[in-house]
Image (cartoon, rainbow, N blue to C red; front, side, top):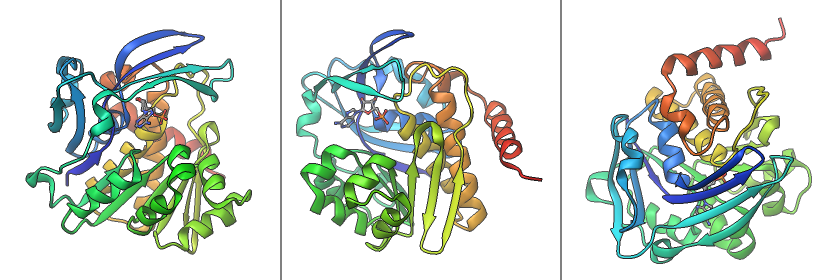
Length: 300
Ligand code: AMP
């Protein structure tokens, strides 16, 4: 079953102790697609400027990612810069040049309007609502957002949460949204707004899947080298939603496996800049790491 993603398509400039990447392909929609396409076909809606060279994302076409919903507008592509600290979990945004992204009003092509699996990547929550208005009868809506929208448009973020089935936030965003320092009870507050599940990402400490009466947690895959954490959240979401769309099922085991597949794909993503690692990855690599996760979390 295909997945629809609406989000940013970017050229990122990343700096950290391992080097610098200039104008390399990034953005939430592309990180998501690179990951989800291991499991399901993906339809992408986004915008780029006339300077965007589609050749740099050719690998996505070979993975059944439909890029026909990426609009090309006169002007420059969205650019974002991030500089990581020695503690690679911390970063500063060095610049955000919205360019053509500034006036992005996602129109969902007719062919995608019956999508059953929808991922609302991190964009303005007002636009996320407009996207939902154009989808006919989705089975599953998964939502991502960020601190910026929580602090500037909280009421609208709340509206999108009410119309979504699964929310993916990190620990900081969960606390900021609720004002509650305890993640578990903060998570329950978010669930009381209506979604079935909340996933709380905790970076190198893994992720939690919280339902009204259920709790699951997985560690992050242990890595000795994290080269570039950019897009970890979106590649996690890609693995998670892509797997659910492939299985067409939301039972307890499938959901848990989806969280682990999300963590596995994110762990590969952070081993190199941009999507370099995901381009070369094989299904066998993913499966091996999934089995390793099973082994390291088993008690007996
Ligand atoms: P993450 O590491 O999960 O925060 O995702 C990083 C990606 O998000 C980068 O590839 C950026 O291009 C993209 N990004 C950064 N800021 C924004 C924004 N304001 N809106 C949409 N995408 C963004």
